[in-house]
Length: 178
Image (cartoon, rainbow, N blue to C red; front, side, top):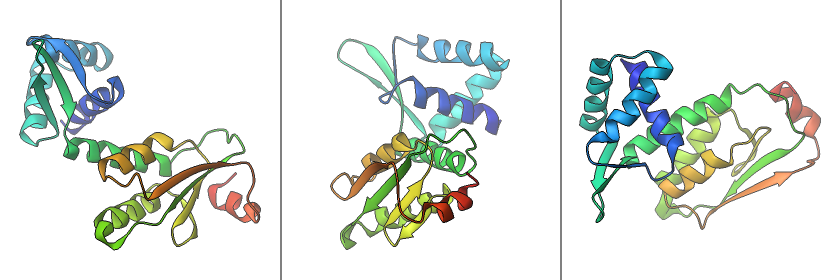
């Protein structure tokens, strides 16, 4: 069952940043048929999974003024997806493009929860801690960082950079097996 839940969350996450807009009650039918075709899940399994996601408050539905229904991730659902994404970053093995992704932050104490959460996710994602609040990663991670920063409302305190070179990078390359 966990596999189905994860697949539905991934599907919503990738469809659009704001959710999937559909007319009437066809919103889940369309999502279900896509997943059923791709993964062979039964309609009963998908219906139960969607029910569980709503019950766990990972997805929500909203009707706009036109009568369209928007199925989107809740904050809790977005955080779950961000966690999935950061875990995958830690296991990423692909051809390196020669560029370093740098995340630097100076987050005030009033946002300590967000700062601690960011630190935790960067370490979970296998980022290299260059200094206390500067991390490096060899692979594209901008979407993960942007989604996290937006969710925790840290836009004013976190910077993302793309570097061609950093001194002492030979040691960092070894850490990432490059």
